[in-house]
Every structure is written in C-alpha cells, then in structure tokens.
Length: 376
Image 1 (cartoon, rainbow, N blue to C red):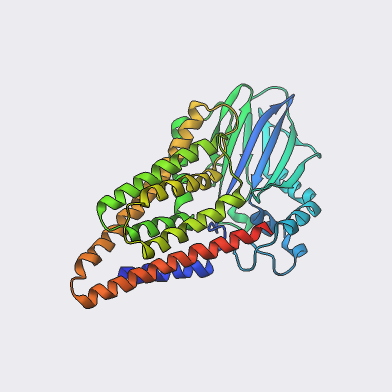
Image 2 (cartoon, rainbow, N blue to C red):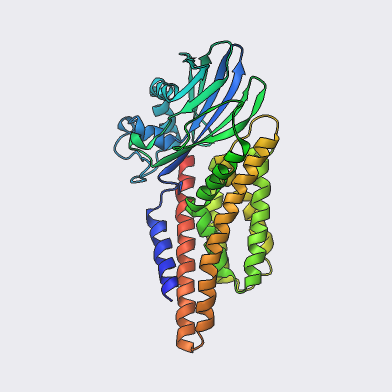
C-alpha cells in the first residue's frame, strides 16, 4: 500500500504542477549545417520558452507569459509569433554569437541576413549564413543555452552536417561543446546518444505516466511483456521513420494526442478489466509516442551508417530506461496484489489502484487541455 500511496502522490502532483511540455530543466537544440558556395548555411532549431525567457521576450508579452519554470499560462501562438517578429534581430544575434564556426582556426563570420520564424511545431527556427575561409577542416562550437545563462540546467545539441563531402551527425553537450567535421569518432558517440534517449524518456513525464498506466492495468508478467513489446516495436518504427523524414506529423497534433493516450489507457483500466484488446491499442499509441520521441532528433539527407547508428543508440537508451521503470514498479505492484489476501486488504488495494489510475488519467487530461490550448 505504501508504494501505491507514493505513486498516487507523485502523479497527482504532476497533474497539477507539471507544465504542458513535461520537460522542464533540460532542452534540446538542433543544428543543420550545409555547404553553401564558399560558406556554410546553418539552420538552428530551439525551444521558444527558453529563448523567450533568456532574452526577456516575456517583458513584451506581459506578466502572464510563461517561462521554462511553467509558472503561468501558456502564451497563444499568434502572440508568440508577434513577439518573435519584434525581436528577430536579438534572437539571430544571440544564436550567431553562440554558434561559432571556423576553418583552420580562422573564424567564420555570420551574415546580417538571418531569418527567424516560429515553426508549426511551436519551436523557433533561425537560418544563418556564415562566410568562411575557402579551405581547412570546419570546426563547430555551440554554446547555445548553457547553464551559466541561468535559464536551464543542461542542453544537448544535435548537429547534422553535409560539409565538404562529409555527411553525418554528432551530439554536443556540456562535456563536449565542439567538434571538427571529419574527425568524429563513431564509437564515442554511441553512449552519448544512448544517454540522450534515456534522458528523453526519463524527463518526458508524459511517456513515464503512459508506462505507469500500462503497468497498473497489467495483471500478469505475461501482460507486461506483451504490452512492452508492442509499445517498443511501434515507437521504434515511427521514431526511425520520423527522424529520417519519411513520415511527419506536426507537434501541435502529436503532443495533445500523446497526453490523451495516457488518459485513455488509464480510464480503460477502470472500465474494462479484460485486456484482450490492449495490444492493438498499445501498438497504435506506441506509433504516436514514437513521433514524440523523434522530436529530439532530425536526420536530413541520405540515411548513412553513422546516422542509423545514432538512431539505434537513441532508441536503446529509451528501452533501457523503459525496462528500468518496469523492473522497479511492476514487481512491487505484484507483491502487493499477492499479499492482499484478506478482504479488507484486497478492498484497500483495489481502492489504491483505482486512485492511482484516476490520478494518471487526470494528469493526461490536464496535459491534453494545456497542449490543445496552444492551438488558439
């Protein structure tokens, strides 16, 4: 009963306090680099809430604007777009200063014709053109969103490139902020992408609650194995397909539906004790969650061995954390069920399970309403 009480308190707190995006202190940046004549073109994708708080865009939006702390209501999309247009020069200047390119230790210069826009996904996209020396290996250094800025705790930056005949990707973080094209080590990047995948699931509280909803509805170890396998296969398929650009869905559709999937599975636990229909439902929702996982990765251009390795490593990280959650939560639930042999204990267990399930459903519905409100 103590474990159920902990789970209930946890999910109830999450349902009230967690912001719509679920990720609070860790953010992801995506950078795409392409040869552009004698220079280099850079397309940078960052989280709106982080750049807005860092550059004090909320001062224009008013006191009700939200920051990465999630302390207030979400800002409507049109208001975000107007604020971003008014401060496009500041945003471009920040990104251009923090994303530094050089050839043979000679720095490249970012042009003044940067483009800044709010994408359909709700993230900010900045297009920059760098004037670089004609020869020499290209070195990339990113200091976009560092802990020293006082806004976030950590940042992972996924850099994809097609430079000087070299194609691939690498991952930068606080431990490694720069890399030289053509001098990357494939094996050293594998654990970094495994960690990124694990963090994406662990800090994506909506995905964690979905797993908890599945576990609360599982009666036997066989049920857990079946739903975990269905979920893994489904999200692995859409993760790869979406990351390489073969399938796509806007974030403003995917994120509310992911939240709704949490509520659906939780309510289904209460209304339908039979689980014969659960596998196709979980598989379908797994396809949806895979699109959400792919939001942290983007592969542009031909699918190479290195990018495939990155995708597999990222997915391995997701699976390791998923298995850890199952290994910690389900045995405890199973022991409680087996220990509740007396009628009073059985009723208390049933009540506790129902309470936890309702709390999970409530968190999913809260996230659904919050994320849907971003459409207005």
